[in-house]
Image 1: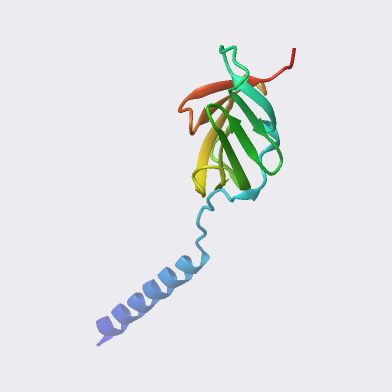
Image 2: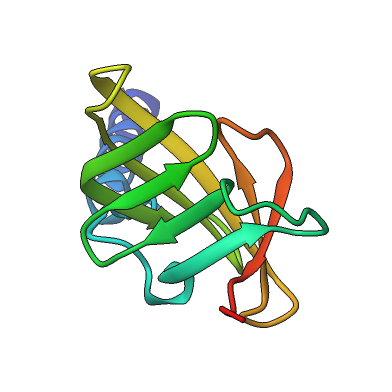
Length: 131
């Protein structure tokens, strides 16, 4: 009978320990979505090493515009930081797709070059400086 009481006390203690420790555990929070676009991406961009007046990327506070063979416009923008210099931008493309679209940007070499994954997979864009 004494062994039974001891075993019962040990089991109750283990169950209470597991219950208390599970209540105090915290989980890692995923990156949150923010309204607008990151300041680092804002501005006018052009495709690197291509002299064309058509291929332009413009990022404003609330929209993303891509001009190539046809316009690509995102509105109702949200973004989240996915890495040290990487961002995912999600919005509603209202020109052709009429659907939610997500594109990825990665900033390299300070503020001068960004990598873009979307309509131009892996295209490099550089800051546009009008001549």
